Amino acid sequence: MKIISAAALSAVLVIASPAYAQEAGDSDTAADAYEGSVFDGDWLSIGAGAVYSPSYKGSDDHVVSPLPIIQGSLGGVGINPRPGGLALDFIPDADGEVAFSAGVAAKLNRNRATQIEDPVVESYGKLDTAFEVGPTVGVSFPGLLNPYDSLSFNLDALWDVAGAHDGMTVSPTITYFTPVSRGAAISLSVSATHVDDDYADYYYSVPAGGPLPAFQAEGGFESAGVNLLGAIDLDGDLANGGLALIVLGGYSRMLGDAKRSPFTSIRGDADQWMGALGIGYTF
Image (tube, rainbow, N blue to C red):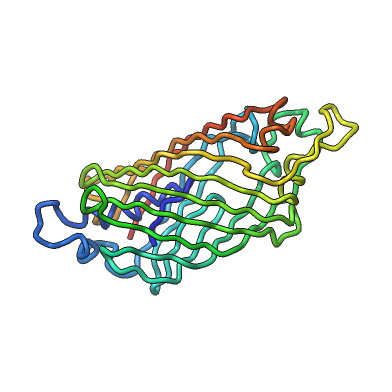
């Protein structure tokens, strides 16, 4: 299922391109939108981008990081991006109908593992990189306000299997997508992340004896936010693949103990802003 995740630069291309595989005045229905387009069968989008985001979750310092882009469908298996990883969807879609997804997601969590700009936070040491894996499920409803838009719901439940935080996260996302022309599309996503005690303790607890007051973090909602993405095809036709420019802007708010932690409340900021720019090629 073609769902746009919170920081997935290429996802707009995935939904936008088939949506305008035909002119709005054609007699065919939206269910035939994939036919004759680059998305009719196996396809792949690859590219690269740069993201300007907080140096760690809760930081008020920002850094620029590279962002690879990959998404597609090969042999009936959907490949969808996730921040720091990807998800595989093993349920084939029926064009123009309510679509369900189910599969597995995996990502690297490098929070406070690199690029710590705050010297006080850095004095507490860098953390290990977590490798998070788990199931992902979702549902998408097409054709709400026009023949080519969609409303999607997605849920990822991930566990660290690399021995870093040894915890679990649950991340629901709601996304509305609509094309605005044959060559451009936008998507609005609202998401949140809930974490368990192990995760919260690893990233947000502050040990005694350092420059910051001691703090014991517990699980709960870590953050909630909104992202606006846009795709502009460089030849004016999203349906034929090729090069496209992707723009992303986002805001999130730290919540619970992630907000109360001195790493955020004293050295950082609960308000988190990010932006990204990327270019991708679909074939």
